[in-house]
Image (cartoon, rainbow, N blue to C red; front, side, top):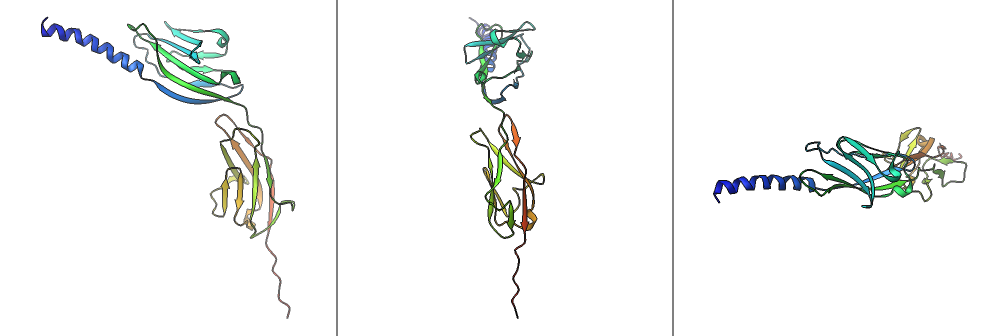
Length: 228
């Protein structure tokens, strides 16, 4: 066989191999959804070669398929999900049973086997209930300037990833005499300017909630005059 003929045979084969390698590239993601809410798995699959795009759950249950310009939905996913032509999938009315692994496959001609290109690990979380915000003092939230004290934001056993503390609506964790550590706010020490209305906000990737308002009154320590 002539050298030119060999080159002609190799070029189409190389082109096919490059296409398969691009399709085989796989990305992994984590996602969080709110119970009863929606989650969107964003994709940007090229429509070149008119690919067949499919979604499945835990590598077993078929969710949806985009083929020849039309989306088809399967089983319990009918009526509560939407698939777009670029492969993006939106899943609505989330339940705890929706937590798991979602895989997207792409099949491009002349390949006959769909190849998984994206994987999403979804966690469905409940909406956070309001935390209880309280002081470590039993003196009706009245404090004396110069003393050390703390506030506690009790969110219970909920999946909380962040606590933020506010005084009169402003985040105070950056102030030099204040330390915010997980669910506690420490004053080292408290000053008269710390008087105000306090709240704490708890968050996770799916929701947030605000505590009760806690009013603190800080008085200046009285000075005793020496008698003549």
